[in-house]
Length: 637
Image 1 (tube, rainbow, N blue to C red):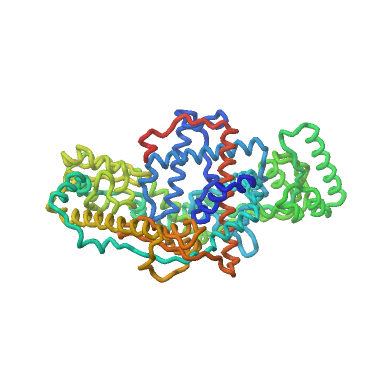
Image 2: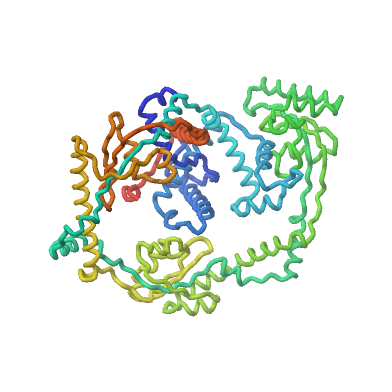
């Protein structure tokens, strides 16, 4: 990599990346179970990614995007072919990474995963203990269970073991970074001369023939798209939940029936010494590890007070060894089964026999016990209300959905009966088009292709019947009917005459300004006298980057071996620009913070390129096969 960076082309690419650094999501956070090969879109190491798996991945990514984007979420994106193929590529990367983890035999012990979770800000108490209510609330907000999150963190830790050497070991030569600093901080003194298009308006005469010719040649610009006004009735979980009332009697009964669920489970605190050995290690290696564990256990039987000292000296668990083997408090389900079985039969202060797990051999000392205890109703009241409401709403939604579907079909000439029956509102929306009105881009229903296909069906448009009940997404249904329908039409010339005149005027004046500016540029480069330029200003890449003045990029791209030099600006409708570069210099007092930021940005960009190359290598190693490809129509999107 270092040799490549020394080549000019790569250095140039890195310099460009000072301005634009692409974001890179390396490893997905959702896992998917294989459910049959089906019409597999791809294979990794000969194993197919099933159609169901791909669909599950699309749904998981769509849910994540919907939650992250909030009001800015565009439902049309997740229905696009491009989104589906992006998800497939990410799914392939996850499978490739999982294959590499398995090949390398990497592991993340439960204890280390727990420690990583405990480091998440905001989920621990002031005493450093897990605040279970806060933790579970945070998981619910992301649609996760604690077991799902535990698995997610483990996979992220495993993936980081694969990529960490690549990320942490990446370096750039000092000469490269200094060269980039110089280019970024370099200032150029520049003057500007503008040929404004508006100055040429009096020279333009537009004939009737020109206007009509433009109208005839560009009729698509003046076409009013087919559109309609419609009434809608929406059934969603929110409207159903609003009808649910939970009584105190129901709350108390639910609490009594689920008392064990709301109890604080028994917690145990243990320390351990781990003698690590792979489960597939040779028998001799496993026997040696077992003998080491037995030797340590014999020392502890003779002197239990040695546990912390021996843990610090011999345990292979980095998360607990430095703390004398202490794992803190944990409940059932947090440790691997053999470890847990031993920890929950020991008495306080007792050291158990050697336990074998996939990570090696453990010696466990139980140091404390917190018995299970019931939580009072007042403490879990709000949780119970929410659970009851969701359970009742789910049942009621299913009932309402059936009534909704039947009524909009059986009484197809009006939406009022179903709205009255289910206490829903009849909504009216105008200017709905087949391709979707941009004004409704964020609307979950009006932007849905399923809805648009239904409302523009022949039965809805020509016969004016209700659409069927369309399921937009789980727990969101809609039925609609057309109020008025307007076919596509071309607006008459008389309606668009003034707009055509403005378009033609803009085109002609811009062309005249450009021609005059180019002629002046030629004259100046042939040694003509420079007149009409603005007072000088200093321009730098740093200034362009901070202000977004991309129109000044040609100034920094110009060859300044011989000064002054004249260059043209970027094309724009208002006219033509000529820049006169008089001087080039570098500030005497560079900003160290800016330099550090540039260096980090360049490192990230170069590391991203290295990571992309590494993932391509892993894909080749895993023999990735794409069994399906986007169609030309999908590719164009």
